[in-house]
View 1 (cartoon, one colour):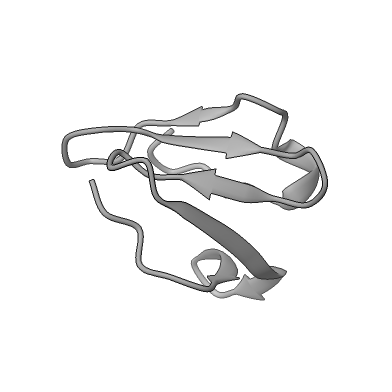
View 2: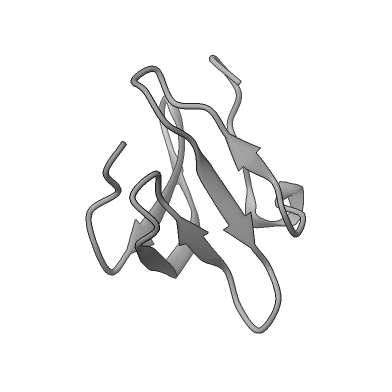
Length: 66
């Protein structure tokens, strides 16, 4: 997904993001956007689709770990 800006409408239930490092992040869209990191931790999406000069930002309530 390198070079791709993802907005909330691009997320689907079970969507997998493969970061540059090891592990993957899985998106769950049921009842709000929740990201499961490689360690199985649940991270909630707080603010979404914040447009920046070089992409799109999303605010989360915890640190994503590979």
